Length: 333
Image (cartoon, rainbow, N blue to C red; front, top):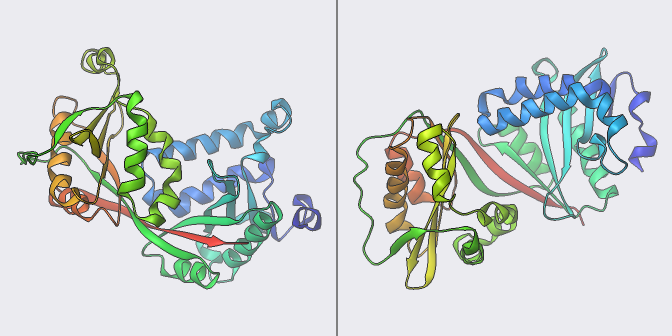
């Protein structure tokens, strides 16, 4: 087993397992250097949390109960040169499926690139996941990172679809796009989650359903109660609105708008393929008009390659893709 053959304290130069107490601060610095330009507010929040974990790692190792140590959550490998971490790969369990794992934060300092460090760390991560009984590995890579994409393809990873992380600094103008006739738009609440789950199964292609199994819990949460929505205007407390597009009794579309007192407002859209072309633009315009009654903050959205009409609508309103990711997977067993 790799954990027996290669211990964190035995390597002064080259690859070794991640040691939380020694390495995590340097790993956070490496992640910020490699991925800082593409991080959205949620990404920066995750990096801040990782940095806090790095500072508290020695204390957490002592205070955490058995089976819940930080090392059980944050694992991976580093490459060390002259006593400094110059490369990293993180291995994390997939939240909803025990046999799937995520490889993340594959980063090498610029001065050390081109030496095969990332490839060696990737092979170590894959072997480690096999040792744990993992059957699938997933990762994301920037669309324009041709070197990394090529490496992952040669290692047997399959490209599934593109993910577009989009942002606009404020509300666009010209939001007079009316909703099409034939459908009824009304708020959705927590008790509607089963209908939303059925729509998830109908609205996404097979590869996306496989990948987005972890989206289902996010869709369990419906519109905030009316009192919370009122407090948004009076006290600056954020809230969520969710609308459903109904044809008769069948739910055919969902629009989520997260109104935040600080940071970026967020939008999410899910439409059945039969109404995707006609409803994407009008429904997004409806959500943007709703945001007009709140502070004019940046707005973000995450869309996917199969949502072409929604992508086109946001681009027409001045939204830009600040990062485009390729979602990839590899079967181990």
